Length: 218
Ligand code: ATP
Ligand code: ZN
Image (cartoon, rainbow, N blue to C red; front, side, top):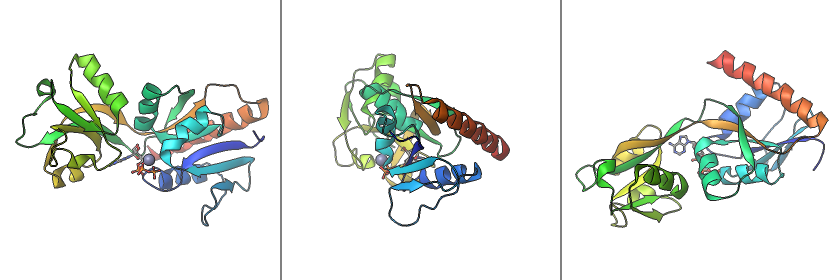
């Protein structure tokens, strides 16, 4: 890989703007306008790789990027479902959300105790499966790629396990959260492999700046 530090970031979405703002507050000068997916930082030997959040952890793990910013929910899910060589270097405090179990207000499932023998729709089979195992609950996971909130009303599951920030989406679909199984925020990740001395120095410098920015915005 090049001798420039490569940072994988979400191109567009709930992590993107705060990730860009954090790096700008750290003194990195760049422009993400225009369609380029590899953006050169003008004043430091750093490149930004703009991708979907689902690819960030595996890019860092596979050495396509040195570090990345991703939701803890995505990182933990991938750690549980694929061999991932990436670890949290720092928690960042933005893009906070919870992975929750939720069900229709007057349905057969009202708490975790009711889950045995039922179906749970989720895009997070790893984290949901871990929760069930820890509680000794046997339930069937129905894996969906999106629109999980629809599952109970179309009859494919009795409950769902999905990300919640305000609860408005759940409410709009007649669902209520009854258990939080993971609290998540954006995290800065790095691969477990050693970096070259130059990159390691730059990484340390960047981490100190990130820490300073996070403390000042607390
Ligand atoms: P991409 O196009 O990059 O695949 P996406 O649609 O998968 O984007 P976003 O909806 O932008 O992802 O969410 C990115 C991350 O933001 C989530 O993984 C999570 O960590 C965080 N997040 C914060 N609040 C919410 C929320 N209410 N719903 C979903 N994700 C949230
Ligand atoms: Zn995604």
